[in-house]
Image (tube, rainbow, N blue to C red):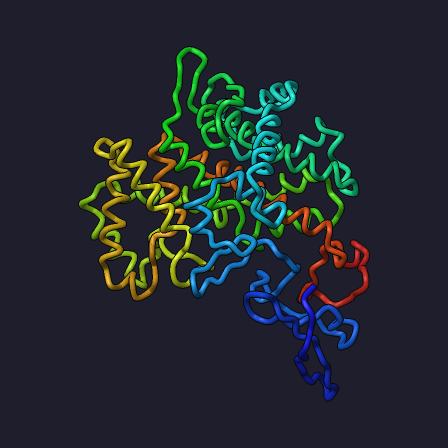
Length: 431
């Protein structure tokens, strides 16, 4: 718990009030307003919670001005370059990097939980074939509480642990099944001889009638996508998971709520929007036209995948993602894919344009991840499900941390009411 060594003072209606100031290990100090209403009879007003710390967390830290993203203190660039997704999962869940023995045990446990209850296959078949994979995932993940009754008691530490493993292990299987169902192909069971990322690619792209070998470069690129999206502090979907959890909801319901929030185009749909923009541009020769439109303040067109709401300098995840994009495009080639040709040339021209450099509008993680997923053969409808798969461990880590927080209370935001004042009911014949 952060301690207060200072106070902030303000005067309201001639009366002075003192508020504790808490100092974190990283980031700006925080004014503690928990007793503001009881002491001063006022609320604060902060739409979007852009200046409000709703919780205390030791998991992820972001400094948007400096382009810093830390997981348990480790820079994301180091983790993406030297580690892999399941090791990062362990780090997020338990706070430290595992020993070799602990990592092997963790990976084995996840691998042996990847299959889903066989009756859930029937649940998938209740959806229309043209259902969006995210709609399917929201329903199926929420329904896990109906299939795994032995891991829904949030007051039992062992059940919390089992639920965590089940969600991390089964989410790739559920996402792959949602994809297979949407294209009319048979489900592919997980394989224990493949690593986490390779197993997901195999479940998405293999068919029973022929052998499919996962290219290690593609598996590594997918693992980096998972790693770079594993957690991102108190974003909208994470806050949704925490808010749902504050009511005592079971873990599967909480993660389903996070998936539903992530589905929003302002949150998880950025890489899909980027690919749609590239298709709108269409051909390389039209790039100057769209760059000029992006620079025209009177034109509503925006270059999607450039700049970031949080990162005011550069996105620290983008450097590693660009490396993966270059490796994947070199492996697969882009000669026959006009969208990827446009992406590569747009990146080149935008980075060379002083306008984008001055405004710090650099390609972000969504730009490069969209390129990679497109090159791998994923339709844009699968971009957000893959994001949800990646973010599951972050949601679970935040969920577990919140449940152990002695300051936990059910979420209950206040409001600035601007409706009618109290008035008396008028009988219908007198209106």
